[in-house]
Image (cartoon, rainbow, N blue to C red; front, side, top):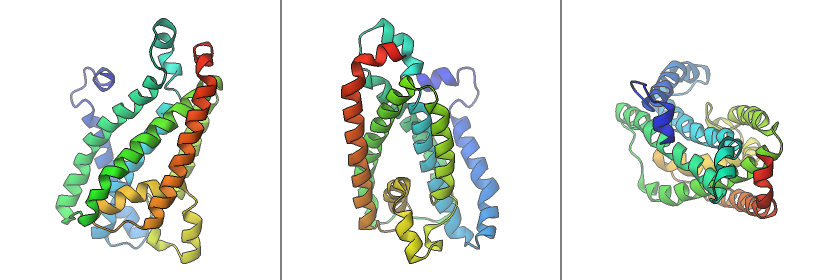
Length: 237
Protein backbone atom coordinates (compact mmCIF):
# COMPACT_ATOMS: atom_id res chain seq x y z
CA UNK A 1 0.00 0.00 0.00
CA UNK A 2 2.86 2.38 0.79
CA UNK A 3 4.40 1.78 -2.63
CA UNK A 4 1.08 2.12 -4.47
CA UNK A 5 0.29 5.32 -2.60
CA UNK A 6 3.71 6.84 -3.32
CA UNK A 7 3.39 6.23 -7.07
CA UNK A 8 -0.34 6.80 -7.44
CA UNK A 9 -1.07 8.26 -10.86
CA UNK A 10 2.36 7.34 -12.18
CA UNK A 11 2.64 5.44 -15.45
CA UNK A 12 5.49 3.10 -14.41
CA UNK A 13 4.86 3.18 -10.66
CA UNK A 14 7.71 1.68 -8.61
CA UNK A 15 9.45 0.67 -11.82
CA UNK A 16 10.68 4.27 -12.01
CA UNK A 17 13.20 3.20 -9.35
CA UNK A 18 14.21 0.27 -11.54
CA UNK A 19 14.60 2.55 -14.53
CA UNK A 20 16.68 5.09 -12.60
CA UNK A 21 18.95 2.31 -11.33
CA UNK A 22 19.42 0.99 -14.87
CA UNK A 23 20.22 4.46 -16.22
CA UNK A 24 22.75 5.08 -13.44
CA UNK A 25 24.51 1.77 -14.09
CA UNK A 26 24.64 2.40 -17.82
CA UNK A 27 25.85 5.98 -17.33
CA UNK A 28 28.72 5.32 -14.93
CA UNK A 29 29.53 1.66 -15.55
CA UNK A 30 31.61 2.11 -18.68
CA UNK A 31 33.21 5.31 -17.35
CA UNK A 32 34.38 3.83 -14.06
CA UNK A 33 35.52 0.64 -15.75
CA UNK A 34 37.81 2.86 -17.81
CA UNK A 35 38.97 4.94 -14.84
CA UNK A 36 39.71 1.89 -12.68
CA UNK A 37 41.19 -0.08 -15.59
CA UNK A 38 38.67 -2.88 -15.07
CA UNK A 39 37.39 -5.41 -17.57
CA UNK A 40 33.85 -4.27 -18.39
CA UNK A 41 32.62 -7.89 -18.63
CA UNK A 42 33.50 -8.44 -14.97
CA UNK A 43 33.01 -4.89 -13.69
CA UNK A 44 29.48 -4.13 -14.89
CA UNK A 45 27.82 -7.16 -13.19
CA UNK A 46 29.80 -6.32 -10.03
CA UNK A 47 28.64 -2.69 -10.14
CA UNK A 48 25.04 -3.69 -10.84
CA UNK A 49 24.75 -6.06 -7.89
CA UNK A 50 26.60 -3.66 -5.59
CA UNK A 51 24.38 -0.66 -6.42
CA UNK A 52 21.15 -2.63 -6.09
CA UNK A 53 22.18 -4.00 -2.71
CA UNK A 54 23.47 -0.64 -1.50
CA UNK A 55 20.22 1.07 -2.49
CA UNK A 56 18.37 -1.32 -0.21
CA UNK A 57 20.74 -0.70 2.72
CA UNK A 58 20.91 3.08 2.39
CA UNK A 59 17.14 3.44 1.99
CA UNK A 60 16.53 1.27 5.05
CA UNK A 61 18.84 3.52 7.09
CA UNK A 62 17.45 6.86 5.89
CA UNK A 63 13.80 5.86 6.11
CA UNK A 64 14.36 4.01 9.37
CA UNK A 65 15.48 7.21 11.07
CA UNK A 66 11.98 8.66 10.50
CA UNK A 67 9.88 5.48 10.75
CA UNK A 68 8.37 6.52 14.10
CA UNK A 69 8.03 10.26 13.55
CA UNK A 70 6.23 9.74 10.25
CA UNK A 71 3.78 7.37 11.95
CA UNK A 72 3.05 9.80 14.80
CA UNK A 73 -0.69 9.95 14.06
CA UNK A 74 -0.97 6.16 14.20
CA UNK A 75 1.10 5.91 17.39
CA UNK A 76 -1.06 8.47 19.20
CA UNK A 77 -4.45 7.27 17.95
CA UNK A 78 -4.35 3.46 18.18
CA UNK A 79 -2.73 0.67 20.11
CA UNK A 80 -0.29 -1.37 18.05
CA UNK A 81 3.30 -2.59 18.49
CA UNK A 82 5.72 0.25 17.84
CA UNK A 83 8.07 -2.24 16.21
CA UNK A 84 5.50 -2.66 13.45
CA UNK A 85 6.55 0.67 11.94
CA UNK A 86 10.14 -0.52 11.64
CA UNK A 87 8.98 -3.78 10.04
CA UNK A 88 6.89 -1.73 7.62
CA UNK A 89 9.98 0.06 6.30
CA UNK A 90 11.81 -3.25 5.80
CA UNK A 91 8.89 -4.88 4.00
CA UNK A 92 8.41 -1.88 1.72
CA UNK A 93 12.06 -1.79 0.69
CA UNK A 94 12.16 -5.56 0.23
CA UNK A 95 9.51 -5.16 -2.47
CA UNK A 96 11.53 -2.35 -4.07
CA UNK A 97 14.60 -4.61 -4.01
CA UNK A 98 12.61 -7.25 -5.86
CA UNK A 99 11.79 -4.68 -8.56
CA UNK A 100 15.45 -3.70 -8.92
CA UNK A 101 16.54 -7.32 -9.33
CA UNK A 102 15.18 -7.03 -12.87
CA UNK A 103 18.24 -4.91 -13.71
CA UNK A 104 20.52 -7.60 -12.27
CA UNK A 105 18.84 -10.30 -14.36
CA UNK A 106 19.20 -8.24 -17.55
CA UNK A 107 22.89 -7.48 -16.96
CA UNK A 108 23.63 -11.09 -16.05
CA UNK A 109 21.93 -12.19 -19.27
CA UNK A 110 23.93 -9.75 -21.39
CA UNK A 111 27.29 -10.74 -19.87
CA UNK A 112 26.49 -14.44 -19.33
CA UNK A 113 26.99 -14.39 -15.57
CA UNK A 114 25.80 -17.58 -13.89
CA UNK A 115 25.60 -17.78 -10.06
CA UNK A 116 27.68 -20.62 -8.65
CA UNK A 117 27.03 -23.40 -6.19
CA UNK A 118 27.25 -21.00 -3.25
CA UNK A 119 23.82 -19.54 -4.09
CA UNK A 120 22.37 -21.67 -1.28
CA UNK A 121 23.93 -19.15 1.13
CA UNK A 122 21.67 -16.40 -0.24
CA UNK A 123 18.76 -17.62 1.91
CA UNK A 124 20.51 -17.23 5.30
CA UNK A 125 22.17 -14.03 4.07
CA UNK A 126 18.79 -12.52 3.17
CA UNK A 127 17.35 -13.53 6.55
CA UNK A 128 20.31 -11.85 8.24
CA UNK A 129 19.75 -8.74 6.14
CA UNK A 130 16.08 -8.59 7.11
CA UNK A 131 16.92 -8.99 10.80
CA UNK A 132 19.60 -6.31 10.57
CA UNK A 133 17.28 -4.00 8.66
CA UNK A 134 14.59 -4.37 11.31
CA UNK A 135 17.06 -3.76 14.16
CA UNK A 136 18.59 -0.77 12.36
CA UNK A 137 15.19 0.80 11.67
CA UNK A 138 14.17 0.28 15.28
CA UNK A 139 17.22 1.84 16.88
CA UNK A 140 17.45 4.70 14.37
CA UNK A 141 13.73 5.33 14.66
CA UNK A 142 14.01 5.61 18.44
CA UNK A 143 16.99 7.95 18.32
CA UNK A 144 15.43 9.92 15.45
CA UNK A 145 12.21 10.40 17.44
CA UNK A 146 14.15 11.73 20.42
CA UNK A 147 16.63 13.87 18.49
CA UNK A 148 15.36 15.37 15.24
CA UNK A 149 18.89 16.03 14.00
CA UNK A 150 19.46 12.30 13.48
CA UNK A 151 17.85 11.88 10.00
CA UNK A 152 20.16 14.38 8.22
CA UNK A 153 23.13 12.96 10.13
CA UNK A 154 22.24 9.46 8.96
CA UNK A 155 21.98 10.72 5.38
CA UNK A 156 25.45 12.25 5.59
CA UNK A 157 26.97 9.14 7.18
CA UNK A 158 25.47 6.88 4.50
CA UNK A 159 26.87 9.13 1.77
CA UNK A 160 30.35 8.81 3.26
CA UNK A 161 29.90 5.07 3.74
CA UNK A 162 29.05 4.74 0.06
CA UNK A 163 32.52 5.91 -0.96
CA UNK A 164 34.48 3.86 1.61
CA UNK A 165 32.55 0.66 0.86
CA UNK A 166 33.44 -1.37 -2.25
CA UNK A 167 30.44 -0.40 -4.33
CA UNK A 168 31.97 1.59 -7.18
CA UNK A 169 35.39 0.03 -6.75
CA UNK A 170 36.41 -3.61 -6.44
CA UNK A 171 38.04 -4.78 -3.18
CA UNK A 172 40.56 -6.74 -5.27
CA UNK A 173 42.22 -3.38 -5.96
CA UNK A 174 43.43 -3.23 -2.34
CA UNK A 175 46.56 -4.75 -0.84
CA UNK A 176 46.65 -7.18 2.09
CA UNK A 177 46.99 -4.52 4.80
CA UNK A 178 44.27 -2.37 3.30
CA UNK A 179 41.96 -5.38 3.20
CA UNK A 180 42.27 -5.77 6.98
CA UNK A 181 41.22 -2.14 7.41
CA UNK A 182 38.30 -2.69 5.03
CA UNK A 183 37.02 -5.52 7.22
CA UNK A 184 36.30 -2.94 9.92
CA UNK A 185 33.57 -1.60 7.67
CA UNK A 186 30.36 -3.46 8.62
CA UNK A 187 28.73 -2.72 5.25
CA UNK A 188 31.53 -4.51 3.41
CA UNK A 189 30.89 -7.87 5.07
CA UNK A 190 27.11 -7.61 4.77
CA UNK A 191 27.28 -6.81 1.07
CA UNK A 192 29.91 -9.47 0.41
CA UNK A 193 27.79 -12.34 1.75
CA UNK A 194 25.06 -11.40 -0.75
CA UNK A 195 27.16 -10.21 -3.69
CA UNK A 196 29.67 -13.06 -3.93
CA UNK A 197 27.09 -15.88 -4.42
CA UNK A 198 25.23 -13.82 -7.03
CA UNK A 199 28.44 -13.32 -9.01
CA UNK A 200 29.28 -17.00 -8.84
CA UNK A 201 32.11 -16.53 -6.35
CA UNK A 202 32.79 -18.28 -3.08
CA UNK A 203 32.05 -16.39 0.12
CA UNK A 204 35.00 -15.80 2.41
CA UNK A 205 34.31 -17.31 5.83
CA UNK A 206 35.68 -14.23 7.56
CA UNK A 207 32.98 -12.13 5.89
CA UNK A 208 30.29 -14.29 7.52
CA UNK A 209 32.00 -14.10 10.91
CA UNK A 210 32.29 -10.31 10.75
CA UNK A 211 28.71 -9.94 9.51
CA UNK A 212 27.38 -12.09 12.36
CA UNK A 213 29.40 -10.18 14.96
CA UNK A 214 28.16 -6.79 13.78
CA UNK A 215 24.61 -8.15 13.49
CA UNK A 216 24.68 -9.46 17.06
CA UNK A 217 25.90 -6.10 18.35
CA UNK A 218 23.22 -4.25 16.39
CA UNK A 219 20.46 -6.58 17.59
CA UNK A 220 21.58 -6.25 21.22
CA UNK A 221 21.71 -2.45 21.02
CA UNK A 222 18.30 -2.30 19.33
CA UNK A 223 16.66 -4.67 21.82
CA UNK A 224 18.10 -2.81 24.81
CA UNK A 225 17.15 0.63 23.48
CA UNK A 226 13.62 -0.47 22.64
CA UNK A 227 12.98 -1.97 26.07
CA UNK A 228 14.27 1.16 27.82
CA UNK A 229 12.46 3.75 25.71
CA UNK A 230 9.25 2.06 24.50
CA UNK A 231 6.92 3.86 26.98
CA UNK A 232 8.33 7.26 25.95
CA UNK A 233 7.79 6.92 22.21
CA UNK A 234 4.27 8.51 22.14
CA UNK A 235 5.65 11.57 23.95
CA UNK A 236 8.66 11.91 21.64
CA UNK A 237 6.74 11.78 18.37
